[in-house]
Length: 61
Image (cartoon, rainbow, N blue to C red; front, side, top):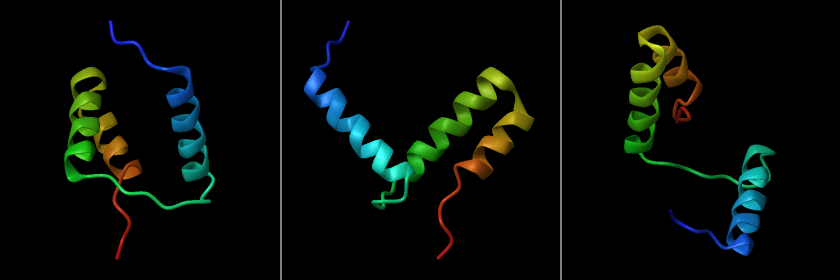
């Protein structure tokens, strides 16, 4: 079992909240998108994975 330091968890949560609130910008890789869509398809089916893929889409340039 991996242990996390509370200070690191608090920092990560702060960062993610700022990201969601639009106070900072962030990006991810194509691999992350693929992993999300694959996991949803495996656990919830094709239709749900299509929805997840659209929700987790990359910003348009």
